[in-house]
Image 1 (spheres, one colour):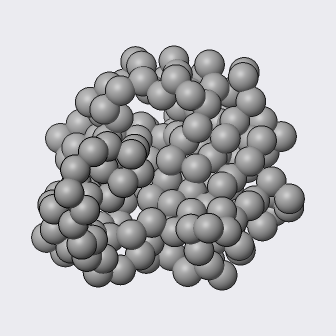
Image 2: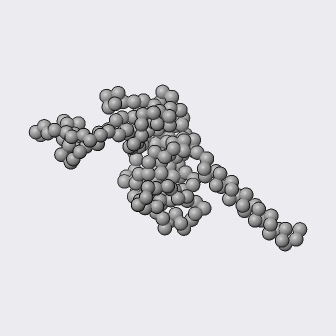
Image 3: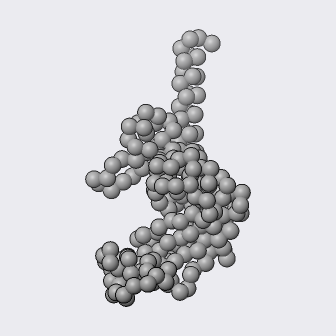
Length: 197
């Protein structure tokens, strides 16, 4: 085989492996996946590991790891509980809601609510809870891209290790139909907290 032929074979193999990596990164991971998310400078340093996340105009670029740092399989999810949470108009309303919820003393004040959003709390088994605790404990201060079956649930910053086995996901802007479409594959594990709806 000539040197030119060897070079062509090497180039073809490299192109084939790049195509495979791209296809694999586009395939949805089954289950609850946690992907590392980084700033522009970190993401640009290793484009093979990170892909640019689409963001609204004016927001800083974020790059998300192509491979999940942790995957929780559907059989490790014990429940997804959806509640409808209020958006308070002001700090006084937040304080009064907190006071009432915990039965604290004080003079009752009006609570002003401007709207509602859905919150999903994903409950996982003990094995998955240990893995979530380890991942979040090692990445305090970092962002994480959380997806379920390839659908992005959120891009929160980790403030502390999650020890409860309960992963909250704010589904602001989602409809009930969208939530049922995404989490419906879990069957009876998806529940709606009736008093909040």
